[in-house]
Amino acid sequence: MEEAGQAPGEADMAGQSKYKQIMGLKSVHFLACWALIYVGVEVTLGGWIVTFIEQKRGGGATAGYISSGFFGGLMLGRISLMWLNRKVRAQ
Image 1 (tube, helix red, strand yellow):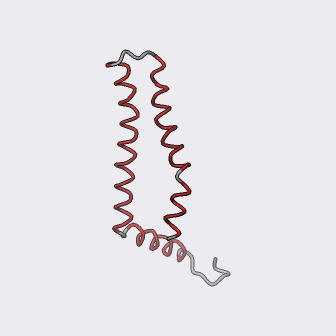
Image 2 (cartoon, rainbow, N blue to C red):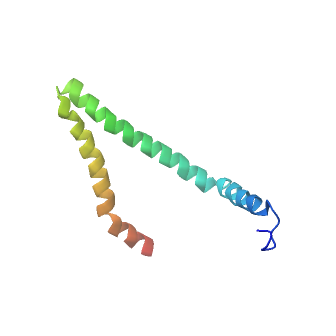
Image 3 (cartoon, rainbow, N blue to C red):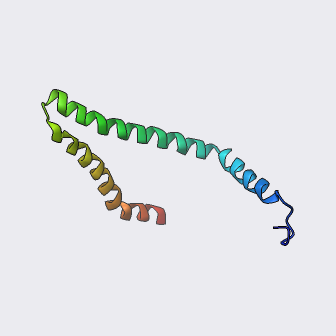
């Protein structure tokens, strides 16, 4: 970097400054909190479904497949609605 005319340590300060600026945005904090809550609810529901089926409905060892179906459905929904995301973004 010295050959390019940049003093040693200058690149580190610039990178730190960018991250500090990004982490200072309120929208980044909002999105991080939203993602934490969303993923927490998603995983909690996935686990609760299996517990409910086993304890209240008398499900057996294969009750875990219900949770797999839940997460598979979420994945398929996200994939199948990509066209809608593109349409909304274009407007």
